[in-house]
Image (tube, rainbow, N blue to C red; front, side):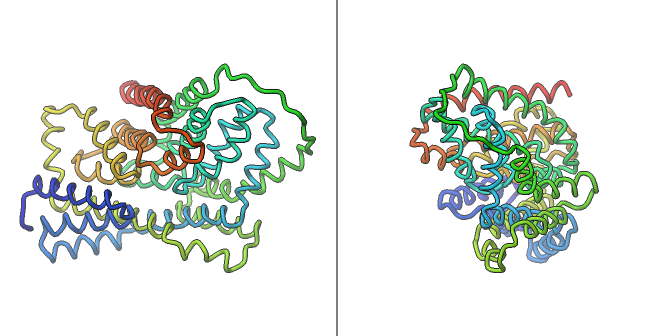
Length: 401
């Protein structure tokens, strides 16, 4: 074994992790370096080599890492080919209701899990919020909040897939329990951001061919739809399903080879993919080192309420790392829960997710506030009530379902 006991090792590792986060080191690098740092503190070299080898050749690790890569590639190709612009434009033409556009467009674009992706919907949301006379703080709130309502129930969300894999649950199991929370998030977003907001009269109306626009929307949405259908209806591995989406997008957009490989030359796609691997490495190092024994006794003897641990630790870690995957991976590694049930797994994910959405380390939050020139203090007067109601719903689901 290594040099120090598990409790000291986890404290030292989290201090080291804090330094990496403070230095704004990419999450993919941060998770892997922190996992190796922890390994060298508590394990000997042969054991470290075995953990790395087992993690690397694990079919589950390979599947999730490949899925993460494929989903990110699809997302970035949507942007590079400008298909996302056509998709957004056709949706805004089809839906002749500013409030409905504002609440659905960020969520549709949210199907593309791109870091800071709220900026993709911001210009279109801005145009519609101008018609409603919303101020900058509410413009920021509705764009940020509605973008993030879709992820807890989106079946090819790579973090949801990662959470299911790490807890030994199915994605469907998590989605079913999270539907009520998402429904409440949408309702809360409407009442806080859009309720009693009068619609300003428009100077002109644009006549559209609804049949043509519907076809245009369906064609541009097809790559995402094909991925979802392949995974849910045909039961294929999500990594294969995402590559199916890439094939459909290429058939529609016919991008050049230069456009196809451009995302592969950026650090973004590799950083996210590396983070998926780091999540499994951190979990396996923690299991091998017995880190779970630090929190396990608290869970087993009831000295600390499991509900408190499942809420505070994931939410805090997601906020600190600025990533849901970081909160999920680290929480599962250190909590030491022997077997996750649907209720514990779902609550852990939702705590990680909600902690991330409102965190000042959240890239979408910072970029959206900057885009609309909104001070964070004004934004949080809407975010905090939304967070509290959503958390209360997640806890209610934990007890009732």
